[in-house]
Image (cartoon, rainbow, N blue to C red; front, side):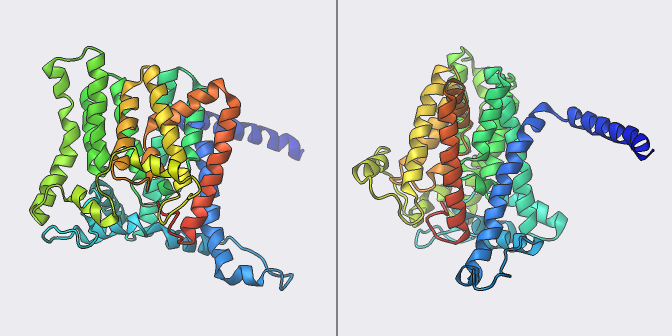
Length: 404
């Protein structure tokens, strides 16, 4: 009797759930699994490593009752230990106190190097919730999910293949520096805006693409790279009239407003660039950083610089430029090229994996290569997961190789 009564209820529940799932956008459904699995891996590392670090390793095995417990408190402590530190500490300072108002000088690091859109959004989220940590973490993860959904749609439309789109999101979810997209950093926001801009351009909505690009320029300096990327694409398509090219102007608005603000508070509109010397960055020939690695192949890491990982992702990104150009995705190729050129011109590979991780063309090229050579895709995914795990562990332990 019980089986007879429950069967219709179970069946109707499944039908309702199935209908609910089918009502969700396809990109969201196909993106959700890699997003959740990759986040689970990072959460386990952020929470588990501090438990091992806090004396447990020294006492493990001393008692049969010793155990690890991933409680809500452990999760909270894990995120609290890494969420507001390194770059995010500057964003937190800007969001909570604003930019430093003083005459420009390079005697010490200053928060002028960090662009305003992310801290403005973080401040708005904190104003709604009344707290900072989880507001920033939740905001970053929501934007990361939106970014992956947009990336899936961009890849599907460019390749007309759901499988390629699935692999594009998979490689983005497990990129070696993907843990920054779980924290109050700009990675998730910037990838979301850049991908949305490219998607709008693909939809032949140039003004919308440029307006979104203007917001990207207010999130990071390399948001301005969307302008030459879009210009090359339109020029090669024969869109060369003044009215057509004028639609690119909004891309520079975000950067222009920030420069005007820096001029008012520091006297230097280029303070965001000139302060980089405080972090040891100065102009060098772009191939010098790569040659330093080739000439010293056994030096695999420096402070803030896991050289071997950064070198590998740089070479991968360079190869992706060739693939995107050959496929006719000229905007993606130019954007990736400039994303590489800017940090390479500072003479160091510091943070290169993070920079490359905001270039959609890299993930799309990986997915295209994988379509032809599945074994390559499997190999790269295994390498990427290993690098992600290693950098997460080092970052959680506050070992400064993993912070960049």
